[in-house]
Length: 308
Ligand SMILES: Cc1ncc(C[n+]2csc(CCOP(=O)(O)OP(=O)(O)O)c2C)c(N)n1
Ligand SMILES: [Mg+2]
Image 1 (cartoon, rainbow, N blue to C red):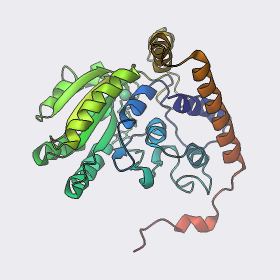
Image 2 (cartoon, protein in one colour):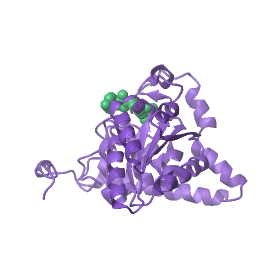
Image 3 (cartoon, rainbow, N blue to C red):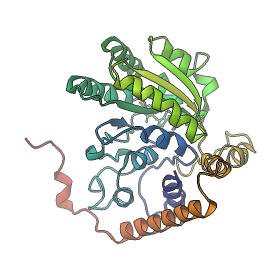
């Protein structure tokens, strides 16, 4: 969670210098969801992600330095600098891709779940999606076929209140996302996404059920994003104290720290050591990314088609 937070906090600064090209959507504030989900998965399980995908990639095990290089568009980035923020992928760890198409992930995860079912080894596929993506038609088609075929797919909704600049209460025509998904006969849970332990427990049960062949399930997590929809968004659609309040009371890292400290699971010193290790890793990632080579003009025509 701390690695994701620092990756994003650092990007917030580096993007402002103009060093990173393209559109970037930061995941800070939502870390407990990516990590609480992916801690229950192995490299053989699949995830699909969104335009706000850095957290999902890191939680699934993508190399952080390779990711930073990718965002800088470098030739030795995780996708050779050809993907950038919205298209980070790493098949070796089951990360099937961040995705610029809102609602693009659930159909891909459903396909991966079909492959997993045919494989018969108990793998599952998880799609991450925002509140806005629940209004996309392909999402419903995917859920319907997953329910019909009893696929091991899990649809995770991160309801961070906004789709771009529009509040979810204004555009979601049902009591909740969860109640809508239930319409497909899919077992659905609503949970607190600010608390890593709650996310982890809820997902542990849902993923185990999917692995055992009980068909798809879904979960709607309440969460918040600490930055704008995209970097540069002035966020004048949010209430004046909303962000301060979230940083004070709904920060999943603060909640994690206070829970593990109160339970005597980790000492302050251990947590500080993790923080320092993460800061050093992110410093190293930025330095390496800044000093890595850019792709050459010849690289433009490679990786365009799959070679057989
Ligand atoms: C099919 C499609 N429609 C519209 C967009 C433009 N768009 C990009 S992000 C976004 C909002 C998505 O909101 P949500 O799903 O809640 O995710 P969040 O940004 O909150 O993480 C929209 C409408 C898009 N990328 N793809
Ligand atoms: Mg949203």
